[in-house]
Image 1 (cartoon, one colour):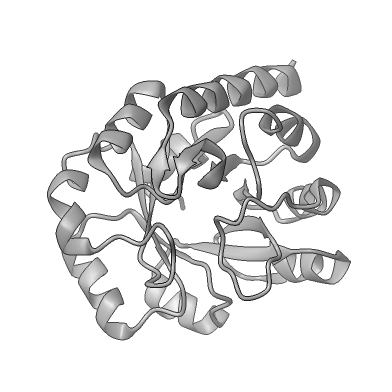
Image 2 (cartoon, rainbow, N blue to C red):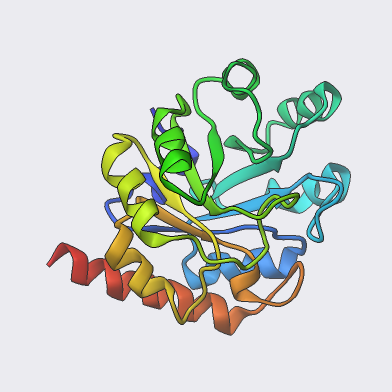
Length: 225
């Protein structure tokens, strides 16, 4: 079952929008005002958008309770996972480093998001077979874990979305100019972007976020009509 804090993003009866790689309070507040449904915070030390729990906890906890808060991790240490759990701030973990399904189930709890790089039929079938309660489809970029701006193959993503039987989030190179077509072709539960709405890594652009939210809403209306 989708946690209450994520239902607006994954179960609100519309295509949800998550902005990932948020590093600044002003960007989070702008996203909330624009109508974004969830925010992602990256705890991977090598990411251009990495944040420290002690630096963001004070303002993240004050965000509206219906705005999803997702902690993105890549092969995380037990220490980091313990800190995130103890904080009580996040509604779910997003595993984005090819973590073993057993590890994700043990540390992610009843609900977590699993990042799945999709580049061919085999990886698409692998995503469908993954037992995670929510899949996030991203473009394959060797040695990198999201935020690359590479566009995923939408036909493969549509195959996963149609066959998964649970929430599927589309990521991979989405921006205001292409997200509407992506929603029409893939029909995901929600979309996720980081670099597609930035002026620089970790610095979100309010105009781009607004344009993306509006494009998703317009496309979703067309799909449902």
